[in-house]
Length: 413
Image (cartoon, rainbow, N blue to C red; front, top):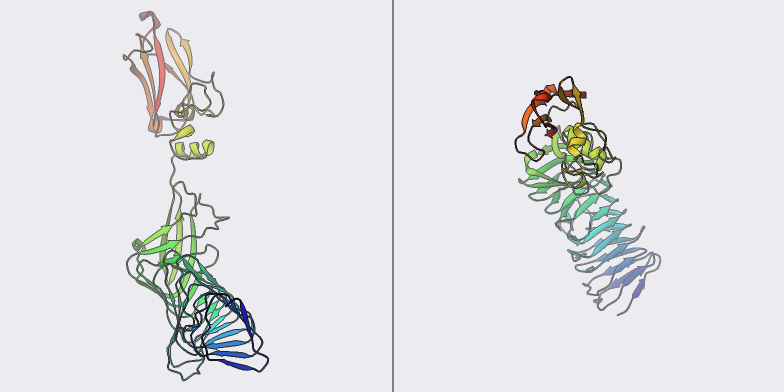
């Protein structure tokens, strides 16, 4: 079959007893009700634009679209039985059991991904209906409501079910794989099975009226990709879940996926207090030298142009010397340091020092040659001896005792 439409007029009730098969999309129009008594095997998208469709088992195997004001109602199990790659766009109503309050049948729906702002409901109060979201390739973001005696199951590793509306369903929400997220309100209990997790929002927590249970010992927290305005240079704490209570929480059981952030150090962690989960960030405790590198080269790492031994401005002084002397590593400093002089009968060398206790300054002397291995330390400064300002070091030997004499400054961290 090609694309087709079925129209049921106002106050009409059309009974379809045959099987619908072939290729193409099927569209339901008109304000009346279409009742489908047999399974369908057509390969296209089922669009319900108006009125109501009441269906038995396996009527929807591919994509489903329910427009605002329209309804798809279950009169049998697996009336929606999609593959994991299919989608349901719900702006109207998806009723998982349309047989009345006393009906004891427990129907299930398999959905690939779920989106829209419609409603998932049931008329039965005597049995639990189950909505299962299975996609492992597409996130689901549902802004609508889920109400009644309904259990929600999330399968599909690597994807998140975002529930952003008011979800007053009375039965558990169980995450077997992937993540649960959103900024909505879930009035019931939430159970995270081993290996599952949460995708959190920095601006608004997921609200759970019942108990959030961690039923395992390995869970994942996924941070959102939209991180505008988040400063990872300072300590931060965000409430990411508000729950009535929490069971089975242990911080050491969590891994945190912060791949959305370009972090150069620092650490995220998760904590729990009085039923609420908090995401915490502690920036790295950078040394003065690492901060100097970042301020001038945009990295804390001892690599590339920011490496201690590098000389990006080509003035003959390594970055470490420029740091220790308070110089600009990106500006030519050919006359900056050190300055050789004579004080009385001794040679001197003058240079600038900074107050970094992790540095060690040496002045060494030799009477051999600049390439000699015969250098002797005549002065050393480290720890609390390092104070900011100019330093003049005087040679320990008289000039008159040597026909040649060399002094040099060395620096290490």
